Image (tube, rainbow, N blue to C red; front, side, top):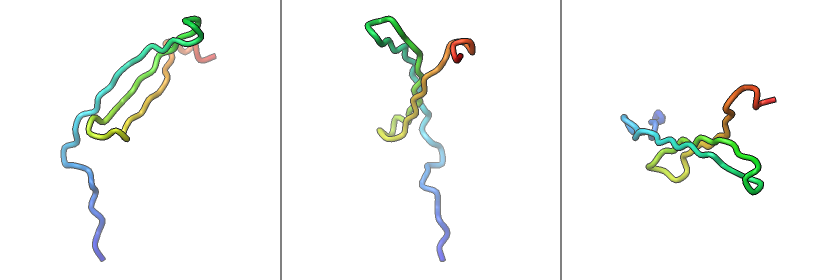
Length: 58
C-alpha cells in the first residue's frame, strides 16, 4: 500500500482579491461583492456578496 501524497505545491501562489459594486434594476439597487481567486487556476475562485452594515441584513 502506498500513502497518498497531497498535490499542492510547497508554497502556493498568493491569492488575488477583487471587490465589486454591482448595480441592478437600472441603477435602483446595488450591492457589494468580493472575489477571491487563485490566478493559476480558472476553476479555483470564490465570490460572495457582502453587506455594508448589519442593519442591511434585516
